Amino acid sequence: MSEEVTLPLDEVRRISIDVLKAGGLSDDHAHAIAEVVYAGQRDECHSHGLYRLLGCVRSVREGKVNPNAVPDVVDHAPAVVRVDAHFGFSPLAFERGKPMLVEKARRMGLAAMAINNCYHFSALWPEVEAISAEGLVALAMTPSHSWVAPAGGNKPVFGTNPIAFAWPRPDGPPFVFDFATSAIARGEIELHRRAGKPIPTGWAIDSEGNPTNDPTAALAGAMLTFGGHKGSALSAMIELMAGPLIGDMTSAESMAFDEEVGAAPCHGELILAFDPKVFLGADAAQHVSRAEKMFESIIGQGARLPSQRRYEARERSKVNGVRIPNALYDDLQALLPR
Ligand code: NDP
Ligand code: PYC
Figure 1: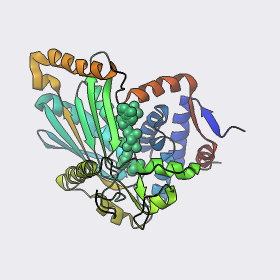
Figure 2: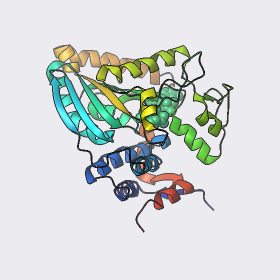
Figure 3: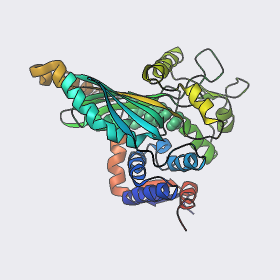
Figure 4: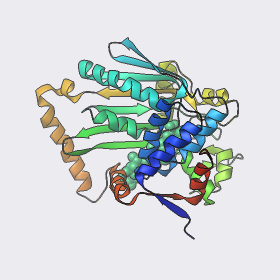
């Protein structure tokens, strides 16, 4: 018997919306969340695809998330937009704030959007990709829960703290990277646990501080930063820029706020948008072509660009649909109305 089930893409979106609505989320939240989950599954980013629906519904059931929150978009300063998510999930807050961020970036050359008081579970690339579709360069970052030990330590301080960047390209999809500043996203360790698979050495230590390949021990211990002290410093920067700078919680504060119920992290997110046309004026095309030379020199030697795998997966999924483990499919079915 196959251990995976194949779903057409339309079905991914339908299941997502149905599970979220059955879980009590408003229509607007269900649609906004379904889009990022759909995109994650379509692009074979398994740790932030359909699997995330389980955590979204659990977070609502635990009484932490406001499933009907209506984000407030505030014109805070000439180059700053603030969005108060009112303790709802972040995708709707991003969707509502993006038009003002884009408008400000086009006017000022550089603009920032601070999302506050949001429950955050999603990958960041759908957001930076959406901003780059407007011809802007984008950078996004967010803390999470304190699961990650600083380089040289063994007790969690940082979140898995992703950082994502997008650069629009003239003849095709943007250059995008998006990764956790931990060695790997926590969701990936959770997927290893669900599949009964060991994790690679270097991802985490157990609660005694010893290296571990056991995902359960890793989840109970501490995750490690990527690139040692370099990932650790970047992670600290994200805590500061998407925490105190925007008046929101650090990963340790988000963890305390959770009161051990295991809901999604609750904190802020910082998104920056740059308009090359304002920076470069009439010289924009010339400088953009220099960027293209750099991309060509990467691909030309057989290396790949970040996001290349994802774009290939996107095309595959459009034709073949997506494959998910039977166990995940059953868990999702159990969340649908009978
Ligand atoms: P990875 O370690 O797999 O790194 C992903 C990034 O690196 C992608 O941009 C990927 O491109 C690129 N990449 C991977 N391998 C290569 C390669 N050989 N050459 C060039 N580029 C490469 O992912 P993570 O586990 O760190 O993060 C996964 C996701 O988890 C992210 O989308 C992140 O936003 C999300 N996340 C969200 C959190 C939150 O709090 N909301 C917390 C932590 C993570 P490609 O996609 O094409 O493979
Ligand atoms: O996979 O590390 C993670 C994560 C945290 C919050 C959302 N995803």
